Picture 1 (cartoon, helix red, strand yellow):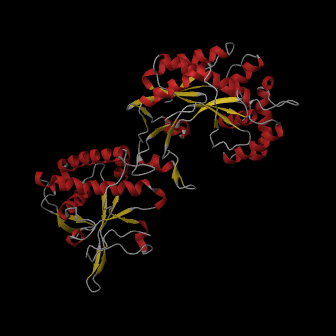
Picture 2 (cartoon, rainbow, N blue to C red; picture 1 turned 120 degrees about the vertical axis):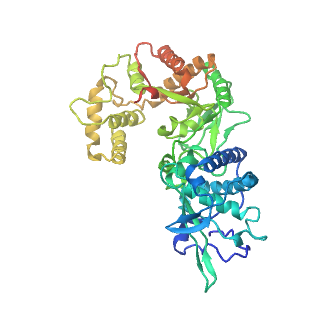
Picture 3 (cartoon, rainbow, N blue to C red; picture 1 turned 90 degrees about the vertical axis):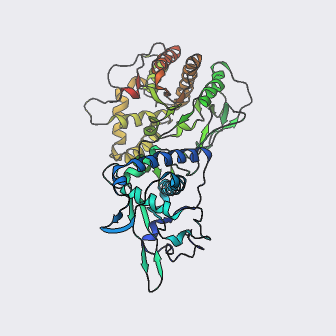
Length: 482
């Protein structure tokens, strides 16, 4: 139920009970600024920045001393910004930005407006806003409406109503424009767990080796192993320490990006509210089987989001091996890779993504029948003809017949591939750690500070050659994408 922050204020204006028309999309101005310390710091900095923009804006300055026109009707006069009122103005603006970023962050609440009283009675001695100055709140609301950084008001005002006969009414509401939402996003105020910032969490005593029993859900971490780290595994605590110092963060480009990565089924952001930071090697069933590197929150991000990651506020770059699993299949068979585009099937219209799906599902399945059944579901998700799954399977493995995984009595090759991939990953981390370069391994790719792109390329080339010297693998960078 919507909490009425104005109760006890002796104001005739209030938001109606939830379910009364437009109030379904309204929330009162938050009377208190809560949140983590980093969030409050960002909020205060944003308030200072915006206040200076408002104070110096030509449209705002030109309207000081004049009635503000809203919906073609003159309202109250915009009073001047003077040093004496600065602190009161900043406090009012802080509450407004805090409230707007709150409703914008929690998309599942489906809120659009902030109810904000613009009458003196809403700021009485016993109300929720006694600590706020009514003239300051009014001044900030009107200034934000007059401020048009992209040709449109920073906030729209929906005037309140008042029935003198019944002596009841509805408070004024404000709505952030798209440019305002983008600005709040770029200032780091739009957060999946608003108003708490997603701090990186490191285990006091990290576990770098885990064993996951067969049949355990993929989402669960395996049980800790008690053996000591061996060989290249010893790089894991070193790499984790480098990442801990790297101050990884995820500044978002705009509000549309935040909206696009909201999971409506679970009503949470895909951009991670809690950021677990660890690096461990995960084995399947028994020590030595599989062994991929997991544990860091960056590995769980949508691939589109990773391009915005920063190391100490500096840009990042992601480099990945092209055709890595296919290249390793050829290596395990002792056969050189063919030339050309390996995810293209001549004389067919199958997309690269469809061909990659065949490979990914095939290496994880123990039979052709199992692969085709899973491939049908994958094609449906890609909005392709699921009935052609069998045709796609045959076309792809005819293209790569010499490394076809499903022969009589053969097992799924994914364990061998993952074990080899993990060895290469650990070796690459070793080469990077020699130069003190922080890196997040993501299966067949590595994310590093952009200034170390050349060093990462060299480390990846050397790491792959150490284990598959007969295979010429290519490496591509996100900086190569135009």
